[in-house]
Length: 215
Image 1: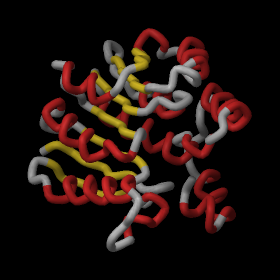
Image 2: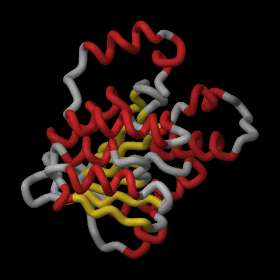
Image 3: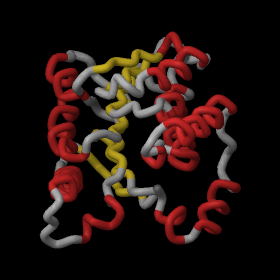
Image 4: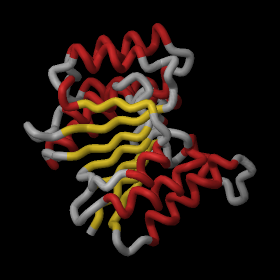
């Protein structure tokens, strides 16, 4: 959920009304996510989805990695910018919900370019020899710092890495947080800011996106 969505719904509507429209398939997916899942707020949503699409179109990537598929909304946004020979690998561990992204991936014009895996992301990263042009992480927060460490060797100069929910509803301002997820997100944000191989900026979009570029 975004800050404005929670605190100022009028501003949130204004932001959506002044962004490019989402494709019909995403409208349908967003609607079904709210109808059929217990935590629909986990979807990337309209504004963040348009950001992902614009970044992907700017990069025209050949190899994209997504950690945390959920219902596949962000996957389809990222796929909009793929090069003609490009692919996106999207990883999740929730087999019970997998029917929903599979349904929309098969209906999408990018179906042949999407590789949806039910697999632990840490295992995947430890075993793959692929390099990625664009990475989007929106998964279990307790592993964010480890994902950063594992992803770094799989990037090259110009690669973009995006971590979602890095403001964690403002909890990152807690000086001594008790919640492990808050501790790890703060660790990630510190790692990103101090790593001299990356340049980064936290975008205050929705729940915060840490935007990193490999130098």
